[in-house]
Image 1 (tube, helix red, strand yellow):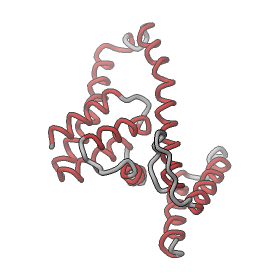
Image 2 (tube, rainbow, N blue to C red):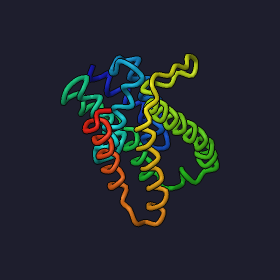
Image 3 (cartoon, helix red, strand yellow):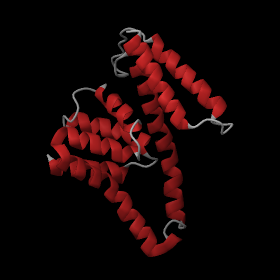
Image 4 (tube, rainbow, N blue to C red):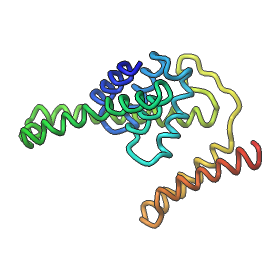
Amino acid sequence: MVWNLFWNFFLIGLFTFGGGYAMIPMIEEVALRETWISSGTDIYGWVGIAEGTPGPFAVNIATLLGYQNAGFIGAFFATLGVILPSWIILVLIAAFGKKILETKYATAALKGLRPVVIGLISVVVIGLIYQNLFQTSLDLWNLSIKGFDYFSLIIGIVVFGVSLIKIKQKSLSPIFLIILSGLLGILFYQVVGI
């Protein structure tokens, strides 16, 4: 199990570009295949926990899934697996200088990767919205809708609106928005009991 966690997170770290959100579709596919999670909706719970935890998203989710499936040693090796590819690439860039990145092939490859990153992040955003509003995972081939969650929509609109207005003005910390979202969640889902 430990080798499995290390190797799969190594591949995830090696073949995903664009940061943590671009990793989510690949993490979900691997986690379901390897039975680290039981359903597609589970990944969004782990995403929420990883995002609410200080530190880089990829490290947090690797650590959480590693710990859930193989304890401390699993957390260590899953985390090592996800950061090792970036570390190796940075060492190579440091050793060989910027000449690698300035070649026309590297520039062309990076330009070609940008649309893929946008597409992967878009899939994650749509999946998160769908899962939060309808309390089920998004399956484009078998679209089913359970109850609509109006309070998730309200929380999302409030936080989105506040962030559009205040973050652009540099007058509000994203940390405040995270705390606001958590407090609204506690209010709606625990205190009010919805």
